[in-house]
Image (tube, rainbow, N blue to C red):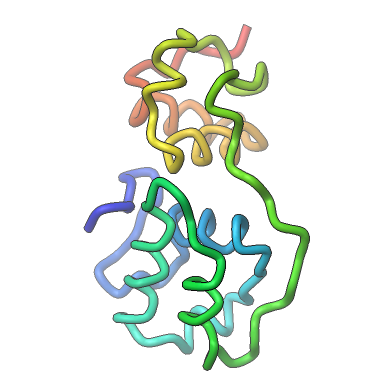
Length: 135
């Protein structure tokens, strides 16, 4: 399924929320509880994942997908996609041309993983092709 990385460790049922679904929620300014995710059917989970793969996440589409979520999502400050013009230092060295060429979902995954160094190495390896340590 598009939008599922190996590092997401996702199963066929989408038991845990993949990175693409998290991106859709963050950009839309919504926080979905694990309980609500678990109660969503597989098709709704897949649609949320797909929404997170788009070049531009449509917050109204994400909200519509979650209209019947139980419990309902919590509103949070929307988290914009990382700046495509400049890679943040916390993800380690990356060629600026490579950063610009990445999909928005890839840039989001790298920035999110930067909070956990052990995960960042896996994410860099899969997306950039190099788990080069952070200088």
